Image 1 (cartoon, rainbow, N blue to C red):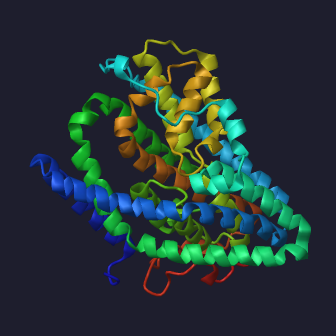
Image 2 (image 1 turned 60 degrees about the vertical axis):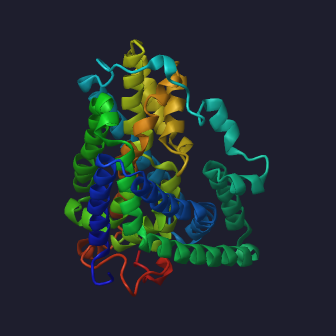
Image 3 (image 1 turned 90 degrees about the vertical axis):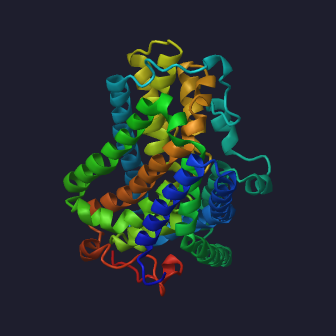
Length: 429
């Protein structure tokens, strides 16, 4: 298997998973569907297991690493600015597609039986939920948003303390390296995980369940595809003077893994290595990628909630006005952190619905097909998380353009390179 490129392995797992899923559904093979579910579930569970220590140590180390980056404050502000710009473009496309396609019109669903999802979001919950009442509880519960908050505070404090905090920083670097090493072992299992995840999705959902929501599902996929393959390439050319084909060649392993794993945080080590291979200086990439993996969500926090809000409004017969569309855009740009890695787009959707005063039970109508939608949403998220640091580095003149042009010519995950990102040689700034 090591002689087969990693991306080809994932593709083979995808094809085989679809075939097994159809076989299980067509012949009512519950044992096969159950096996696929178990295989895919174990893969995701292994990814989630690494999330708390990975997020905390990565952000602490990334914040402290800004000490060695010239104009760190300006880089951080530009990163945030580009996060906002791309999110605004993405949500505009989502709203535009929603108005064009009317995804909720003509849909006949049992709205009386719809219930609000267990995880909901509101501005009050979002703001009060940032600060944990118990630091240990944030890790035990896997509350990514609270872990991000703790890591930012601890990292900033360590940065200001300076030399006295160096033993603590070195400890975090060591833990990060260990977690990344273990996570690369899990990532090696991605082809098998892909087989299970895709196979279970096909066996469990099939066309019968998707059919009533086909227009909405298509709109989400088309919206994400427009952002991925139209908006991002245009931004690369116009803002960074970069060849989009080289970007996708370098970032594709991360995008591909995001599609099957449905986890931006779980994909983070691959995303960071991809970004570094694209020529972004490691010191900056180690800040921008972990930060983006928990807050930069063009798929989950922009395109999807915009389309879903229009869908829910149309199903429940609520007319939206210009003010409502502006609120959708505002929530998408400002509230992206509510998705925080693994909490999913459902929290962001309920935050949007509650802001607009729409029934939260509307989110329950979409829960059945959420795994299918989450694949393309997460792929779009991760592509954006790789795009922004690449553009910022290009505009700052720190991007190694020779490395960028050669990105993707070697396999990202191969026999001698399943090690943490610190094995890569630093890119000259």
